Amino acid sequence: MNQKFKKQLLTDVLTVVIGYVVLTVLMRTGVINDYIKGILLMACINIVLTVSLNITSGFLGELALGHAGFMAVGAYASALFSKSIGLIPAVEFPVAILIGGFAALIAGYIVSIPALRLKGDYLAIITLAAGEIIRNILKNLDIIGGTKGYTGIPGYTTFAWAYFVAVICIFASKSLIQSRHGRSIISIREDEIAAEASGVDTNRYKIIGFIFSAFFAGVGGALYAHYLRFLQPGIFTLNKSIEILVMVVLGGMGSIRGSVISAVILTVLPELLRGFSDYRMLVYSLALIIMMLAKHSDKLKLLLGKLQPAALRKETGHE
Image (cartoon, rainbow, N blue to C red; front, side, top):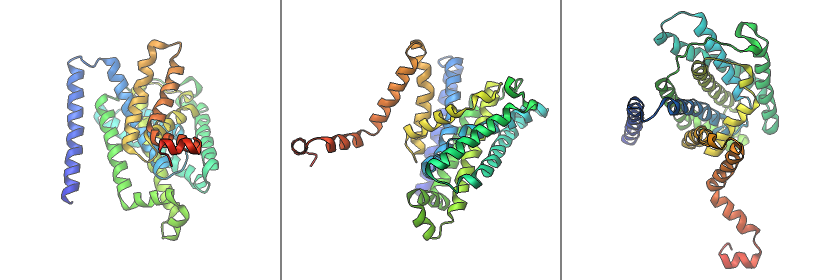
């Protein structure tokens, strides 16, 4: 490892450790109560879901609307394992998380074979359909409660688990994108024909990006199931996929740091607006619009400059 990489790795590790220690101290001293702790835990789960979707939608450049479906597969698979196997929690929960991740990975691989032959709107439609198919299958499985819901799931998810799984997801995503495979994935987003002409196996790297994203969606689902302790197919609708996609878009397509920030903001913001219950969704929508405009302020200024009359553009320096 070169010196720059070692320094960056040390900085990242120290940031993660210091952040966890500070939050833990604040929780144990009562500065952060159980309500805020629950919000922070959900923010960590949303970070896992957002960062993982960014691999497909941001870095690979494919619009996927079935992320909630893969989350559901991971949630139900891990919950079924936890309720069926009587191991000690220290062993059972990490195995349940991995089972949830790999179950979603398999589902993602099955969906990717036909889906990634399509592009644009057609890909979005088939991933949307896959998510709805998964949800309807879950509704008709009596072994996991069907439409009545699946109850009695052990409450294994703690803030520590959610925090460090989010860190692992971020580290794994950064490692993938900074590797040779990640550069191949980005090249497909930039120009698929040129990438293929340069010798990049586009189908292979599309599948790698898609199943990587599905795996961590399943991991996020496992954390969610063991935190909520109750699952119902109605949770994992298209609205859930859109919610995660909004976090990706707000943070920036192809920005892991942006995904982390937007996931935290959009998890905390609805809770801050609970005092304005009558106008909550209106304020939330306006806040989203303002954040998007602020994020793309330079582009907005450029667009406004182009819309101005020629004489005015000359006066304001847009020409």
